[in-house]
Figure 1 (tube, rainbow, N blue to C red):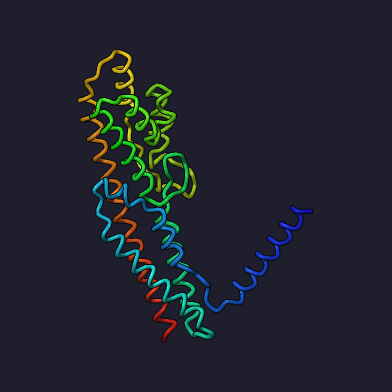
Figure 2 (cartoon, rainbow, N blue to C red):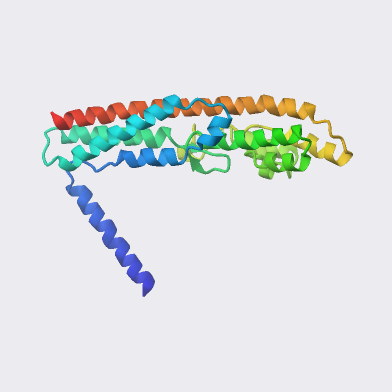
Length: 252
């Protein structure tokens, strides 16, 4: 009975929402909630530690929120507009741009914002490098095992790791429908990780070669992170222009 009541309430709620949406002159997009969600999923501590410049993104995010908030007020106040169809088309285009360009497939085939995969990897790799510099091999291996691809990759040969993670994750090969062309770059630290395991077994505490190699690859991840942040900012700028155009049409 409980499940039947829950199902009934769900059907009623969805039905009411569908009717209200059908009756709405202007589709009730709430872009400020999207801005809130983006900000909630930005780890500014990790970004700061990586030295990533977020000033453009912060400014774009603030303007996008304000434009969405002002547009929402205009939508709620509008009872008639000769430009309703054009406004709805603009809002749909803005939503499509946000949904398309602000989604990436992360390292375990999960949807996330474009910067999140690289945020994680900069954190894990940086802590792994710090641990090696301090001579703490166990702590380093723990952190490095969390780098995308290594959680399972550390248990197999490099050939299998390459097949499971690198080759199938290649942008040209990835075939997860909507995810095609949106895969984050998997950084290959298999050999560094394996070398550390062998040195631990042999009691060799000279990690200078592994640190140098990991640092080079860490720099690549930071570059990818900065690029992702900048591209997000550009997407928000483009979407904001659409919101301004929509508001202008409503006010005309």
